[in-house]
Length: 72
View 1 (cartoon, rainbow, N blue to C red):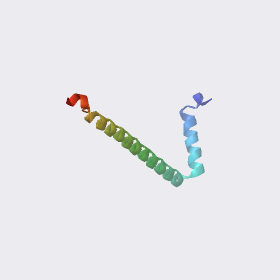
View 2: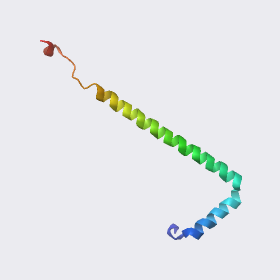
View 3: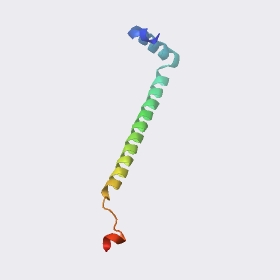
View 4: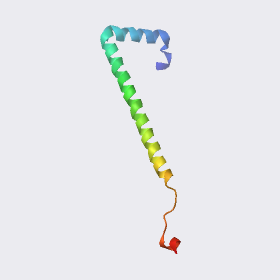
């Protein structure tokens, strides 16, 4: 059913949504969506940065610890 919408159908849906909600409501909604996307991207970047720091911390210390057998 959704495969046959096409461009005229999408334009009709956009016009109906604009009439129902009004320009101000839609612009504020899009602003909130933009803020949500921005915070999502920021969270993803912070998560990957944290993972990279953890990997870098474990990769720094690769020397084996000395045991009593090694000292003798």
